[in-house]
Image (cartoon, rainbow over all chains, first blue to last red; front, top):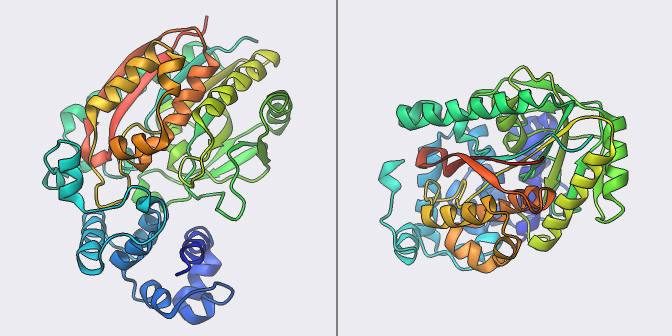
Length: 119
Length: 273
């Protein structure tokens, strides 16, 4: 796991058109200089938004990557929910601070109804 | 000149980017109050607006993350986001490197901050400017508090940052307005996006409006995270404005949860006289 470098790559991609072009042309070339595992490279290349969230990528970085891939907002949110269902709890990063057990359990802990449908 | 204006405002990207998906009644009331805030701001004839934002990896990353940073350039560009996604066109916003330098020098007497001669605005600053300076003709001094990449500066230091900003604003001949942007409870850009803890927000704003220092500084990061999401780290910007207006009281212009905007939309001012 190298969440730091996954996030750093996305940070560079989000703000630098040259990195975006390199990523479009040949992702493996774009990843040079970033210490990434094969699983992380696959998630970035596919892209697997749900798995990137489970890695622990901050949403403030991930949402721009999703927009870059023309993933609309509701689909972006659903991909993260599906990622947790498929791959389990968030493994690292800021969302692991208190654990992340999914939308319904989280709403229950706050004494709320889940409001996913309201969005 | 003494500080001429102080306020806080929400900055969530959905406020502009997902405007068409919100309940139009509450949305338009929110926008109307943002415009009322603009009028109040303009009535104070500011020479510059000092915007304390919660930057989200537009300029700084965890390889070198400042707890507090202030921009020092003659102009700034934004938004870093796709203009269509954010609903705000790409603009160049006027800055004033000399004014920044004088204020930074004063702030540094009591708070160790970073300065940045390059700064790209993200939604944290450009969304409030979109409403408060819609012609982008008012000089902006951007500031940032790290609210996303722990460890975060303690709330007591955000308060001191605010006090230092006030001293700096009062020390320059220009008429300075300050605005804190962000929060309150929210889980932005996560599977819980849209969740809002309204009682938590209202309790926080009650403390803020009374400028209750002890109450504001009593939040812990862990409990705030549990109750109000990782977005609650952004209360630092509100705490800084409260520090800048220590001993005053505030007026709530607007509060309403708007789930599609992912936040309880908040607008408030603090008396500065």
